[in-house]
Image 1 (cartoon, rainbow, N blue to C red):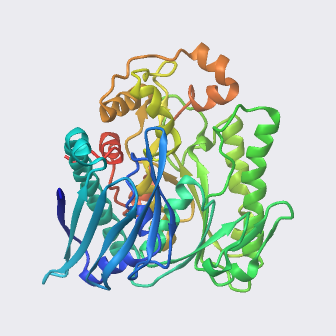
Image 2: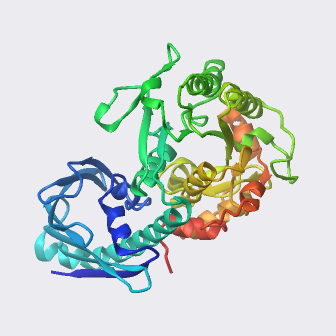
Length: 459
């Protein structure tokens, strides 16, 4: 069978490297963002005979991919064998090797047979090998970054962290990042509660939060909120956006304030929309608030945490920029027009786009949890804001597509209305001054670097 092998040195001892793979969230963190693949079910973790079910999108079809664990040696390695899925055969071996200097090595061996026998081998064998080589290189880069972040930031003590918005793009990855790093995660959920997973029930209609499940957590990360770009800003839509953020945050803050054992910190998502559209003016946390619907919503959103702050809880307002990930959000929406050669500047193209790589946002969240000196506004953006035109050019380069087709301002206003004028034609150039001053280091400080990583271009 064809085989792909990858070996990389990791910045942690073997036992901690192996433990990372055996924890909840590890598979989620190792799914490449540019691929149409997601984890559906992970039964009983990694043990001999346990299975993982994923769904893979190939063309117009969605295929269930089930693999079973074999030869499991805790601290040393394990093997995954395909039960059913897209390959005729699949065997994936993980091995963790110690170093005398305290580091370790991960070795991955993938042996497979293409579907459709000789026909499949002739048609797509070379493409499959290149694709797997690219995926393994990306996986080892993310793994090394995650392991290093936890070595630097976890301070040796596992945290109990409650996370709202845990089913969203950022919240889901935040849960996976924290749990694979050894922290206990409790999801604050508005639907069905999984008590075995220690979910926290939140009824947004009555405003009640299960304080018993929250009591004693070390930190709360509040990411929940209505998607601001999911539809036109009608009066009802704007009301829903505002209420989900302001009322929801107030409910969480009041619940935390009433706990017998309060968390040390509340990390509450906000947005760089707080600053409004400010042209080319450089902005940081000392800059004043802007105007417009987004700015007003962000201001009220941040004010809604006051009950927690008055109860003595340290509150961080994480003002998040555009999150760069190929798995969702703005980048995923732009992939189709850019892949068709229809990408380019919007309006004048001079408006600022303050952004942050997904993995840096997750690390910044843990950094803010651990750093007692941080409170109040913290800009969660990379130190490399770009104009809309430059952002589009960088995305086109990452996708190997031109970015020269303009979208006129008049068309944006006609099609998207107020939402388009604020989100697409407005913008700002924001710097992460407080993160930098507190010693935070970005893994993806430059836009080209962040986009290359998200699309798996490791060389």
